[in-house]
Length: 310
Image (tube, rainbow, N blue to C red; front, side, top):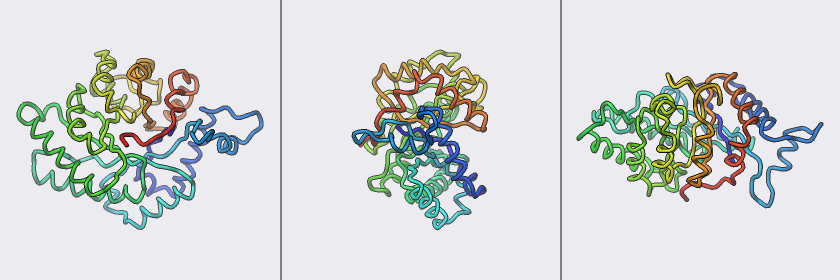
């Protein structure tokens, strides 16, 4: 199964060696998750055992490219095609996280809504050239604003935004909408339910559940998985202590990883995942945690990859 690592577009634009740095992280991930024979080159050994009977047996680290509207405005399609070429030459599949800062896909202000749709449309053009395995997006749901009669309008405008965008990309890859500020799972379930025919599912962001939804304090992991389970196709993995969205390494906060993985097993799903550390230390801690807790992660990471929703 593919495990993805968040790779911001801004970093890629500013650091010429972004690909080399990523490949270094990929090598560290392989060292953590696979055990090469003594004295063997881990990369060569990994490639030799990557496929058995046509199915991937070892986890692969791939980039989830985080697009942002600010950088997209300053980069042309030629630059994007260059990135796509470098990924193809290296044999790397990618995922794409669509922009979300200052964007409101269901804004009740029509001018803001138009601007958001234009920005997302350009981001989808970028994504098309990158040929991602899947897309990630934010809903823009605000539990303080989208209440009562505004809730139905929020759902309607959000549906219009995503249907309009996805209809412009025939045979688009799956789109996973992640929980962000939702305090409860139902608003995300409601949105994805009306978009499900468009191959739209859920990215369950465990760090957001812990910080914004106060998940560890409320001890409601099981409820979230039961409500969202039929639609979960991907996970965002990072940790925090429940007081803020700090994107720490796995095991550095209070996320109950055992509850998460056991809950997914109970509902019979093995989604892909993306690591979202905000520092090198957090990344290395995540690798170490996953290595020591293979009992939690190995089944998910070794699950054969297949296009969700197809």
